[in-house]
Image (tube, rainbow, N blue to C red):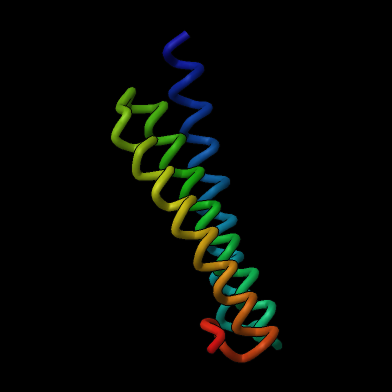
Length: 93
């Protein structure tokens, strides 16, 4: 049973890293700012999922706490970037 979890986590980590590489390409090439924001969004989600897979693999709760913080900060950052793209200001006077 342990071997199945090990190989499943390894496969998941490989898939998340591949997804992050695709997002980096979109971040660098993206024709518009919205594409770049979506690439950053994809990168933080893949990073969070990679940490969750590492937490399962190493049986440590620290990875889950860090993944929760990444999810919270990523959501706030995505909302701020979306508002900036819509109105060109984050804080309204």
